[in-house]
Image 1 (tube, rainbow, N blue to C red):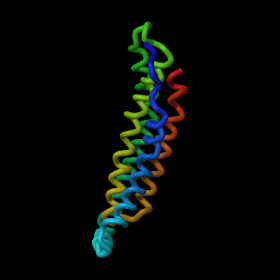
Image 2: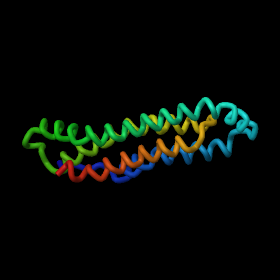
Image 3: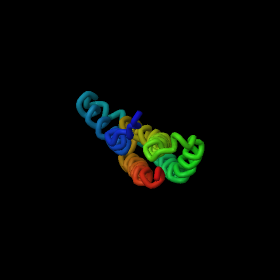
Image 4: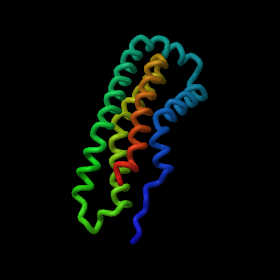
Length: 149
């Protein structure tokens, strides 16, 4: 039975998840939230902006951690493959699975930073979280083919 490579669509969805969440949140808030919701956002801004900065820091640490452990996890899982299953396609599937796992770590705090923006946090820490996450995700994505070779 031929093995199937993971979808490039899933790869791109993973890469654009955090920026897409910010765009979706902003669009939904502008379309459906009442005008006076801005008063609540203004009130919560001083409380939520530091929280968003904390999420940005966690996202950055998560991105760095993901880059650090990605290679080790892939090597460990490939080493466990029986010889008859040690094909390039199977190694690529393993590398892609590890990519999905290790990119979730920085994306979760990035999404939480987006929630903070919904309720009034400044946009700057949210953009910082998304940038750090995106750099980490793209960096890991570029390594998948090499690490599966």
